[in-house]
Length: 382
Image (cartoon, one colour):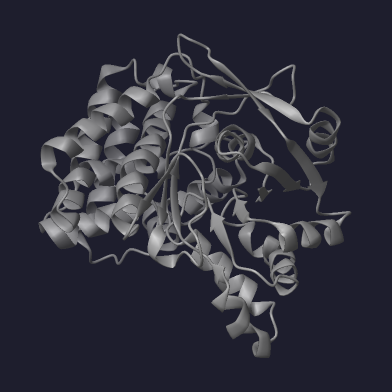
């Protein structure tokens, strides 16, 4: 079996590529990083090491790679032959791979599924839209009849790392890869480790508004306490308590919205915070907190749960407001988005920045609470 995977970075190799190998696939990675592509082709294998006491190691074999910048035709041919196509390139890059995916699908005569493994709601659906834009109108129905784009929710912490062995990846033991089975075309891909679900949205929102929200909040609160890494931040009791309170708010509306068992969700929160505090993972605050404009967006991990809490619970979420305020105070000078946020605040004030980056209405009580929490953090810290 052949899998074509876009994105030969740490997540691609350490998470998706590892599971594909363990499921019996030959994996062809597609990337523009010539150093990684050349190393994968030279060695044909790489190591994945667990970040825990065991340091258990898996050698992932039967891999090769194509540089899509210089060998587009080879990528198209690989997609034409593949049994499965996956991607872990980042939400902003998905549109850029759509052309290659489209051309590969046009050459096929058999069914295949394309799964985008991104930290976003509807990643595969977005990729599908961009792929269809590249396919002539008279071919679209035929392509869709034999191509599935099932949405997925993925969860595994793969921190930034610099290893002597450029292909080695250190990953946390925990992982979750949930895929919406109702959007599969043909047979379900034989991948051990996928959890097939009839409706993905509850899993995506549970993950986004617990793991991604929690990770970002730990970073922004940690930045205010001068912590360098996430596990260091969580050694601070005030930060840990504020994080727990934030995730209690997201948990409240998730239980209300989807009917999750409240006690089970509380245990899920405990597990997630325990993962963040893993002393075997050195995850830099600046990596987790990067790109605050995206994270402050109205549909992303801070503002969206705050708005949903208001709608479903009928109250203003104080700790989510504090989290949004902390993101607005993130002033890492090497992060271009952080610099842009601080520039907006410096020129026009925090109220203008809230309107611009969160799209919240000034009349919304959440807006006033964010301003209040912003001033409190500036005066007293977290």
